Image (tube, rainbow, N blue to C red; front, top):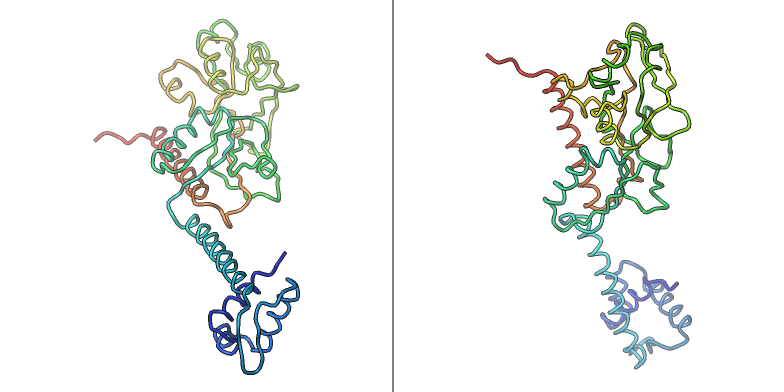
Amino acid sequence: MQNLNDYYYFVQVVKYQGFTKASETLGITKSKLSRRITELEGRLGVRLIQRNTRKFAVTEIGQQFYQHCLKILNDVDQAENFIQSSLTDEPSGLVRISCPVALVNMPVGDMIAEYMQKYTGVEVQLLATNRRVDLIEEGVDLALRVCNTPPEDSELIIRELDAWEHVLVAVPELLNRYKQPESFADLSALPSIGFHGAKQVWLFQSPEQKNVYHDIEFHPRLKTDNFSAMKAAVMKGVGIASLPKVYVKDELISGQVQEILPEWSLPKGVIYIVYTSRQGMMPSVRFLLEHLIEQFKVLDLKQMENQCPAKKS
């Protein structure tokens, strides 16, 4: 790999028609500049400049090489200008983001659409999947993950976006067909809906002792990774399910669904966004990251307003 500095030094020597003026402009000694040009000529195997104590002349091949060097240095300048403009101009280009299917349905799909409406030069590849995506291997810029504890990955930046309360719910018609559950033992008699997996467990937290938990294994009639499908099955009386409260807040208010064992709480589903680094992050990625952070804050405020509506005067 050639040293582009030598090309730059050569251009300056030709431009100023001598080593003295060029060395003053570059801020290096005349002897060092002369040595670099000599090394360049030796590496190329040609004489670029004829010089002695009294005369200075660029050879014919030196003149041709000079024109090539000018083009190379101009291309380098354009490349650097492209990077700088990409980091400072309005967001544009491709962003790749992965997100659990349930969050795409509500509310991330709408958030991304709003972002793209604002920044028309941005393209987005939205990967809706519940599997754990490897950001580096798969070239993903941002990934949303939902879990009860922070994702363990020392190579990634991890930021919490929100925490969704979960509730165990059923329609009244289902509860009327079975014994109204009054204890954990009663839950086993009720048909259920859950996620894919060999073992399904509801983990309840004691209302009196926050560090005391009660786990109940269950065997779902329906297994799915999609909250919308789970909610639809609950509404049809297929079984009981643990759902984010935000998914069924209207149905809880209207009485279409009822919360089971409301004095016990289920672990919250914490939403995280992960990425490799903010350093060197393209504006299109950085602006989307900031947009999602802000939109989840707005969503949180709306949920708080719904839970604590203002009193009418």
